[in-house]
Amino acid sequence: MGDRIVNIEKTKNLILFNRINILKSSSFYETSSWPNTKLPKYLNIVLKISTSLSLPNLFLNLKNIEKLIGRIPGPKNSPRVCDIDIIDYNQKNYSLKIKNDFLIVPHSRMSVRNFVLLPLFEICNDWKHPNTRQKITELMSKLPLSSITGIKVL
Image (cartoon, rainbow, N blue to C red; front, side, top):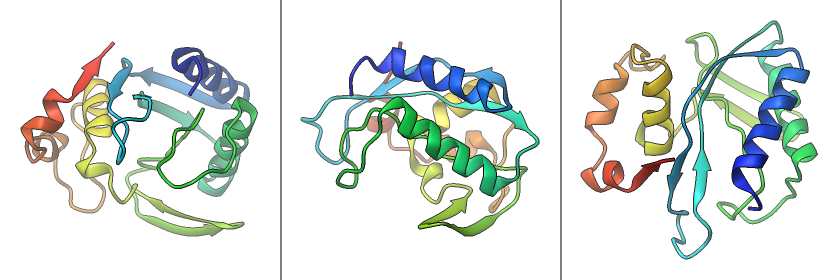
């Protein structure tokens, strides 16, 4: 929602301000909203970061950044100003309860999401899934053709 590029750039600046180093940033990837394609399109990027923060502290920092950008609670999958997911953390598996949230890393549906896999491939083409050890190219090859053609690089 709002000026999507400005929101992402503000988010990146707040990430840097919170002792999180951005090593690489993908291009912007635009996809139709899901599950209701009549809602505004989504804009996504993937960042490769380094930080001394523990996973729970990283998660809490990122949730705070979402609030600072203007995210307010809403129905699941509804349009939002900012949504930050942790896709991978040190190539290990995690399931944590943090305050009122339950965090699973790697993200449970990342391997079937074009807006995660394509930008991730752009910045880290040798990445492997921590659970399955599948290469990112293998995961991308399983995406339906409509999923590949339905994404636009800005």
